[in-house]
Length: 178
Image 1 (cartoon, one colour):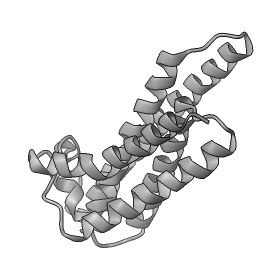
Image 2 (image 1 turned 45 degrees about the horizontal axis):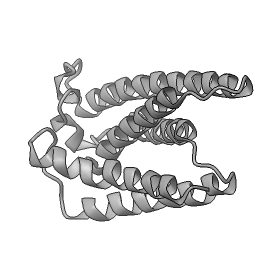
Image 3 (image 1 turned 135 degrees about the vertical axis):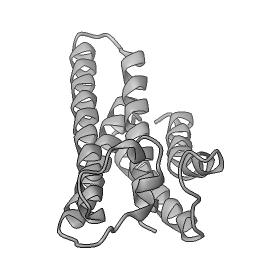
């Protein structure tokens, strides 16, 4: 295993999950984060880093396409869980989401804050499914190319970026719980 790639994967995880939400808040693209956000984000980044260290090092090769695909799957599961919890609640469980750029522009369709939040989370869930689908297709394309002896580093990097973007978006949902 190339230790440099492994370190870069862990560093990318911490940048996307910990640093990015604070930078977005600093530039008023998301609501200001409360003190507990640090802990939530650090624990999340630590867990994902352990996943990278153990799972990817077991294969003796860090593959950006696999990391991106895994991150999309993890984020999809998280958004799905958030949606499932919100849809059965009569209260808005994620009040901070309404201040996140792009999500706050989704028009309200109900007088119920919880119903509107469920709709916003459904949009996030659909986007996560789209990201996950494209990440899987890219991974399949890379695997097919490798079987023919070719490498696809640009597609591999694209998959890593897709996964990191979706994971960073899910981190915003996670810390917006309030």
